[in-house]
Image 1 (cartoon, one colour):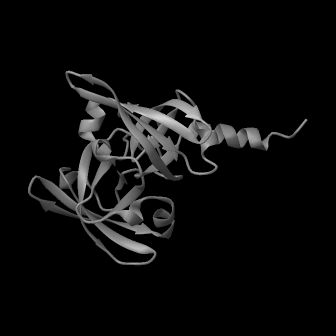
Image 2 (tube, one colour; image 1 turned 60 degrees about the vertical axis):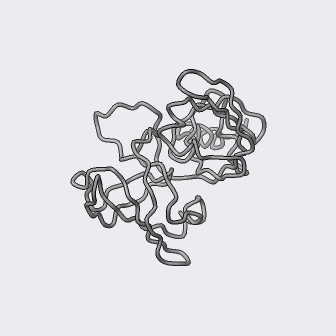
Image 3 (cartoon, one colour; image 1 turned 180 degrees about the horizontal axis):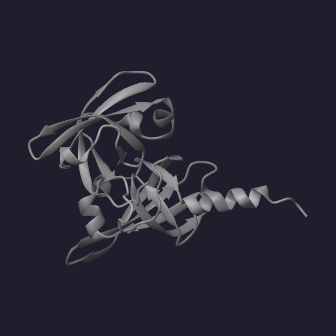
Length: 208
């Protein structure tokens, strides 16, 4: 379980394998002593398992395996060496829940339609991103509700059919990969867990 608060930006070192299984090696500033084999790490949204950890200068290099379901539902299959990704360690009991409950189970890929600067303060710009949700997922996205995009917990500003918008403050643009995002980019989307179960319960209600 995660919160959608990015704690490091990792860099993809290498990608090995083809077809339905890829091994992805990622460099991070995380202390290798704190990453056990089998640990869960959210990598720009998807929860992936650390299968190896090697110390390196200023942090470590860890490897994860991405299988068919992850490759089909997320942007992981598009990653290349040198790309930067948002990282978050799994939530511990007693940790502050600063974002919202995120499982790391990506529902689909949202597309950025537009990026526009809405303010330019002393700490940098705040940018609004307009996105299109994949078919069937827009019903889980509500104005002022929560959404997780590329592993980042965000508040939905507006919704119009399958199009929705989010506002990124200067801090978020600086400490995540959002500063690099442009129109046409795909982002890993996980809808709010509460919204998902609320919709399922509504569907299960017998008709009058």
